[in-house]
Image 1 (cartoon, helix red, strand yellow):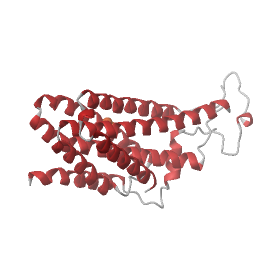
Image 2 (spheres, rainbow, N blue to C red):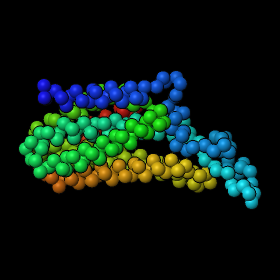
Image 3 (spheres, rainbow, N blue to C red):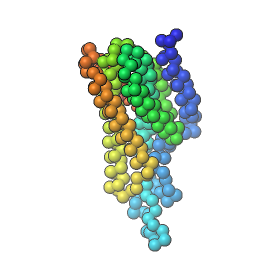
Length: 258
Ligand SMILES: [Fe+2]
Ligand SMILES: [Fe+2]
């Protein structure tokens, strides 16, 4: 029974998170939700207005805030970004949950490191759970599948040995670091465009970028820890990391869409 415990946990987490986020799709289309990243003022320009259409300021009334509504494509990007990030962070917590017992049983000195990385992943997951709930973005429909695969990946690599477990972290964090960098780049391009057009950028939007940067940095810290703990001595390193990285890319691609 003990070996089944890691497989049951994702299903329990999945059930609880799906029930948290269950929203009738007709009442809250995803595209309507991400718009809140740029909170509208009562005087906010509509999608057809321009900065120059705002009334002139008076000495008592400063310039009204001018925040450009998100385009449908931008709303869709933000919804899918939050969805895939939450799925990825759930997978990360499950990988470390499954890896920790076999790794620590053989190498007790790694317990603090495994706990540190798990705690950071759990924090990332809480962040995206909250963002999904706040912006009413549905989680990926493949949550149960990713959960079982992540647990299986963590357990399998940990049983293969510390090097394989660390190679798993190296591969996953390499992909996830690049994935977060891509999202940050896209959001910064949106900010640059708005600023060039004279629009304001909402505080919530800036906070999202800062959050992604912090999480990206923590993922890259995990990558460094893995390499420091002999990830590249795993045999065969190229095959193991190649398969895991390809799997991550596939999971990201699907979770952005489903
Ligand atoms: Fe993470
Ligand atoms: Fe990580």
